[in-house]
Image: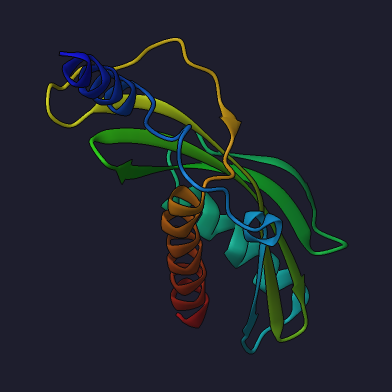
Length: 158
């Protein structure tokens, strides 16, 4: 009879603690630097990168500050990941620096919050963002960061 209680407790904890019990990733996984070599002047690349950010991200994403003379801006963008049966909103800080013939993207500060489940379409409200350190969540987010780089590179190539 005791074994049934143990199994029941394990099932309940496993269903309600989606990211808490996962392995942490190495600390350097929370940042990623990507460089794009492309023809163009600093100001032109800055304007195109700013335009790309505005066109390719949701209204919840924002440019925090920009400096056209230095050719850089800092922003935050929201993306979504699906892990196990849960959906999460993720927030990433993105700094873009432009130089002549080069754009550098630095992704950092990943955070997450649960927003719902796939199976029962329950949406979780009122949760705040927490630092994302779990390996499986960061693997998914880093893949999104690489797609962001590819998207910007394609946009700058036009």
